[in-house]
Image 1 (cartoon, rainbow, N blue to C red):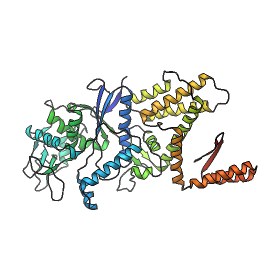
Image 2 (cartoon, rainbow, N blue to C red):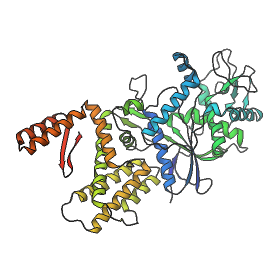
Image 3 (cartoon, helix red, strand yellow):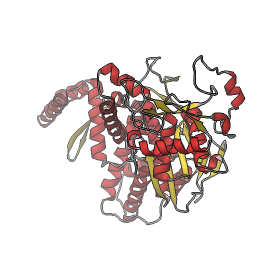
Image 4 (cartoon, one colour):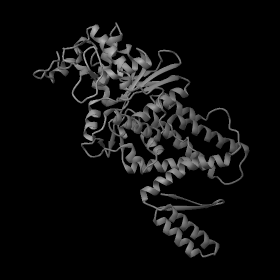
Length: 482
C-alpha cells in the first residue's frame, strides 16, 4: 500500500507516511457556528470523511478531530441582531451542523472540541509565544503575533512577507507594531463574552484557537491538517506561525502538521457560491427536496481539489444515478440470495481502492463503479437458469459494491429503503399526493381484473403525465417518479 496525497506545503503529490506507523492524526478546521451549514461545508466535510474512511479501510488507526468555533465576531453580531445569548446561538447551530453532516453520511469525528472549552490551553499557548518573543502585549488588553519574527511565514501560501506588507498600513492609533501582525487575544468589549487572562478579560483571536485544539487532541506534531482552499491564507498560514514558534526550536513548518490538504470551492451554475450573489444554499434547503446520499454522490463526482459545480439539474442526475445503483443492488441481492461469494475482491474493487490511494480520486472510483454496475445489471437482467457460479458472482459484486461504497460513504442503506427515500423526495419536488397515486394504481388493478384494458391504459397514461412510472411484478405493482 502506498497512499499518495497532494500536500499544499510541498506543492505536489507526495507519499503519505504516518509519523507513527499505523496511526494517523487528522485535523479538519470546523465551522464557525453562527448559521446553518451550507453546501461549501457539505463539500468540505464529505471530502475529509472519505479520507478518514479510506485510511481506516487500509488498516490505519485514525484519530479524526474537527472543531467548532463557538465564539467569534460573527457569532456575537448575529446574536445581537436576534437578541439571543451568543453561547445559546452557537450551541443551536452546532447541533444543526451535526444534523446536516449526519444527513450527508459523514461519520462523527473522534473529538469535536469547542473554543469555549479550550480557554486554558489557548491562554497557555499565547503565554508561551510571549515568553519566546513571538508575541507582544501593548498594554490595552490585546496580544499580537509578531509576523516578522517567524522566518517561514507565508511558505504555505507562497506569499512573500514584503509583498504582503506593501498593501498594508498602520492606522492612526493602531497599537500593532507591524500591520501584518495579527491578534492572538482581544481585550474585552462591553456586552461581549470574555474570559480571564494575564492581559485582562477578553477572548481569543480566530487563528490561535485551532493551534490550541490541535495541541490538546493530537499533540505538537500530527499527520494531516485539512480545510478549504480559502483557509490557506491567512488562517492556516497563521496556525503554522503560532504553533511552530511556540513548540519547535527548529522553526520548521513541518514540526506542526506534516501534510496540508485543501478542497476546492462549490460553484452555483459556474459562479462561486456567495450570499452577495444570492446563490447561497444551506444543506437544509437542499435536503428538503433532495436525498442526502444523492447530494453526497454529486459532491464526490469531482476531484476534491477542483471546484465543483452545483445545480438542481445536476443533483437530479445524481439522484437518478443513485436510484439505478440501488435498483441494481436490489436485483443482485434477490438473485444471489444464499450464495457464497469468492473471498478475493473483484479486480474492479481493487482498482477503485487504488484510485483512492492516488490522492483520494473519488471521481475515478465512481467511474469504475459505473462500469461494474452496468455489467452487473446486464447480468441480473439476463434470461435463463442461474448456475451456482452465476449467483456467487452476483453475490461477490454486491459485497464489493457495498465495500467500495462504504469507503465513499454511499450504498450502505438497504436498497428498498433507499429507493423509497428517493421516491419520497421526488414526490415532494413534483408536488404529488402519494395517496392519489396509490388510489390510481388500485383503480388500474381493478380495471385489469375486469379486463377493461382501455381504462387500465388510461390510468397508466394519467400517471405518466404526472411523472409516475409503474412496473408490474410477481408481488404487485410498484411505482417511481421520474
